[in-house]
Amino acid sequence: MASTNYREAFQLFDKRGNGRVERGSLGDLLRACGQNPTLAEITELERGVGADFDFETFSKILNRPGGFREPFDIEEYIRGFQVFDKDRSGFVGKGQIKYILTNLGEKMSEEEVEELFKSTIDTGNNEVDYRGEFVLSFSLSLSLPSLAGAWETVCMMALDCADVICV
Image (cartoon, rainbow, N blue to C red):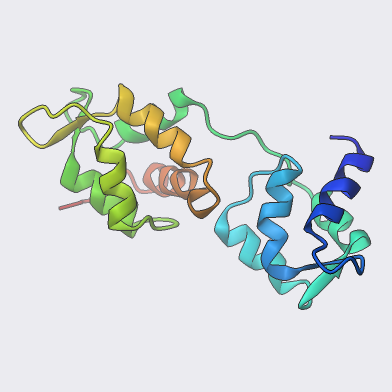
């Protein structure tokens, strides 16, 4: 996105027309400019600005090291689930997935997890085939602002501590 487009995006978020954007819109503005910050990153960045910020401040935030990074692809999500698939069957228990997503990293709500489970085929043994529709629905859900970065955090934690015991 060219710098004029960044300015246009900034102006769209400038609700009062005074050349300033409210701090609470920072995450959405970064996403509108092609970045994919986690909630933790947004919180940290918001600490560095006042109640609102101008375009110069936003430009510094936008051009910070590591600001632009590619989102995970489907294969990376599958590898993340494989950490929890002890017998390499392609299935992980729903209880384990629910525990992981509601307790590790940037936590999802139980309602959000249940919504993801709606995309799965019931195997009859309370497990999810994480290689099928579930992982696709999961990856799409992570594009929502409230869930951005959740799985990336969980994967990093899982790879650092592959023997996590979940109930």
